[in-house]
Image (cartoon, rainbow, N blue to C red; front, side, top):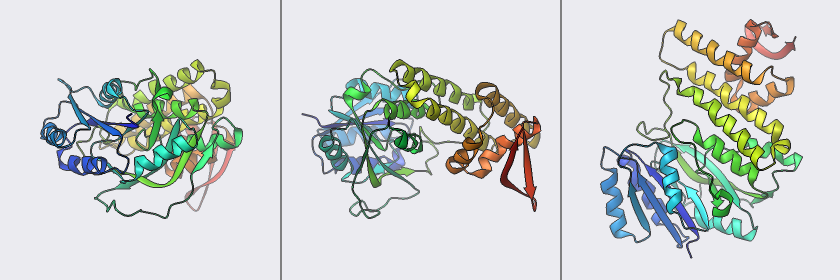
Length: 341
């Protein structure tokens, strides 16, 4: 029996691909299959995959005849996966050698359909023979209980730091031809699951310096930032379809605000003229306001905790310009004292 299927969408990651594959073929959990789907790479990625497939019997390689993007490539991998549980790894990242054994044991021992672990951003390769931090006991919780709901929205939107039971995923798939597809997939699974286990130590190492990666975020001007609204609307629709919307209504609203306001941070880093940037900020802010309305006082503090004051202030400045709030300044620094009109 295959215990875990690991799906890797691959695109132009030849520089880092061997590190990724080495971390997977050396997993202490042996009953795994590695499904690598090359998304029509233009570098040597496919050659490296074929090299490893010849050496390791549990690596299966598939190839897209044209570039389809990360969502569609992961979906293709899901069609081939036969494991009891399913994980995702980006081809320029790597994982700790014990990751899937620890996550699988946590899932089986707790009869949990979803296990999540900690993700560390890196720019270089670390020694995977040693733990990065001291280990602690798993945390098991029911996401539908009020005191636990905050844990759901505080989890990473990445699908890569999670292990999903295949039955939990079922026929559900990633959005295709869009940015931010992880947001809808991951939070839907977190809300669908009746039990979640957290392994509170670093297992997944997310590389942030690969500019060719399928998941790399650039700060170039793009209308694709508006994909976030399609993704967030899908999340709401999908949670309604499993009759859990009333349970997670406030959490879904918070995610809508958080991930749409985050786009203001990205816009603010665009390499465009000041006038273009201000217009893009205004347009995105107006869209957020028209869709989600006024911020509640408690939401402001929660958003600042998740996104940082700098990002939230960009939206508050827009609300102030509309006359919806008054921002009190002290010594030329915006404070948290806000008057909502």
